[in-house]
Amino acid sequence: MKFLSEKNPDIKRTYEIINEGISKRAVIVIMACCSVLYEGRARSRLADGDRMVMIKTDGSFLVHQDRNLEPVNWQPPKSQCKASLKEGLLHIEGARRNPPERLEVEIHSTYMASYFIGEDSKDLELAGYEADMVDMAFESPELIEKGFRPTSREYSTENGFIDILGKDQDGNLMVLEFKSRRAGINAVKQLKRYLDCFADHKQFVRGLLVAPSVTDDASDLLKEYKLEFKELEPPMEFDGDKNLTLDFFNNIE
Amino acid sequence: MKFLSEKNPDIKRTYEIINEGISKRAVIVIMACCSVLYEGRARSRLADGDRMVMIKTDGSFLVHQDRNLEPVNWQPPKSQCKASLKEGLLHIEGARRNPPERLEVEIHSTYMASYFIGEDSKDLELAGYEADMVDMAFESPELIEKGFRPTSREYSTENGFIDILGKDQDGNLMVLEFKSRRAGINAVKQLKRYLDCFADHKQFVRGLLVAPSVTDDASDLLKEYKLEFKELEPPMEFDGDKNLTLDFFNNIE
DNA sequence: TAATTAATTTCGCTA
DNA sequence: TAGCGAAGTTAATTA
Image (cartoon, rainbow over the protein chains, first blue to last red):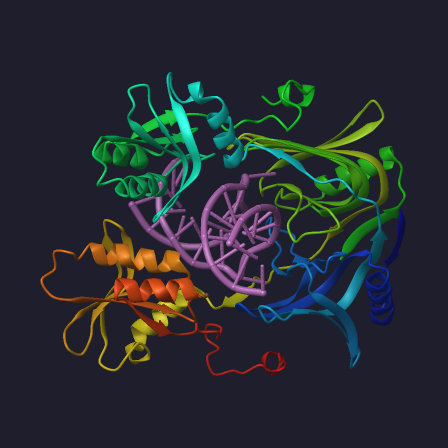
């Protein structure tokens, strides 16, 4: 990896490092005392303090405080970032047109300025999506209940798309709504709205909420609406990897 | 600011820097080639690549690739982070109990390892919230329309809370739903559900969607449901600062 | 602690 | 490009 890192560069040198990093399409990481202004979808200001400033190769622009998971200010990918020296002050501006917004960092002193040109071709593999859960149930309908036969996925209604539509072993129509996390009352209301689309249906239609768990409120509402709940966890295997167990994952307590 | 930054430290030295940073409650920033595993609410793995690893003073733990605004993997504030050397490999683990989840970064080589103990007492001031918009309309009802008289905020119905309930100059009941951004069909449906709660009301009830703009679909749906739209921007002034104009904010094109 | 909701949500997908 | 919906959403507020 090619990189450059300097301690306590002065304002002018920091400016040079940022420009060099931008022109080389590097990831720029700076620790500095700065103030921040944002205007666009909302508007914010942040007085002086020590923060980490990062500009990524795709134009993502982040300002992190020493606390919180999320950046205190940011600009999304594809922002145009540029540095400028004005009256002895260093400004970094990230802007974009749609929506129009602008982030400006004013750097007063720099503790460390660096940029990195690295290799990272790998993308994240992630398991546990709601979509995978629906796929699993569609392919293995016995996970829902004995005799369940799914007929369609993403069945379109005027109140949105039903995850899975099918029939139980007695031929009753079934509407399935999936949640990959604990389901709340909104999930129940959503399911109810799907069932409303079958109000003129002659036969009884069963509504089934499928999730790892439900909140107490949601459980009550299910009873009130005469809907059902089926406990099911989202699949945690990676694609093409269904049979592999990693030691790592057995270590969690 | 007190800080330490070293280039190309070996694994053992990186380990020392991390431990020193953690014990001093510093912000740790590392550029390294690493792989990442996560298990908890979901499960993920990320093969080797060059990334930025950051541990904050509140236990936030982030892994950033050179692209995307969001970290590719992370652990929220209050996570327990610790480093360990196993068979010549450096592991950093961040874990928490509720929900049970664990992030593990395996570092293969380090380009830069650093920690920073800085000062940052300032919090972000932000304007442009939906809540501010509702407040503004409640206090200045003429912004909605001449003769409008708001009666309650957060009026509770079985379909959720109505932002503002009031009456127009002819005494008609009005239900107002606010969005601080462009409103879509979901906002219209939400407003419709509030109006459904007044289905047994003897008089006509007006439904008004208040937002900076609406999507075309939402506009169509408003007509279909015979609901109205009022264009209104969220307030962009900071608290206690209503009369100040900042030069900065005039610069945006 | 749990549930509800807005967010400069972001991100990916689809039309 | 815009709209729609899930997300390891996060973060704040309230019960």
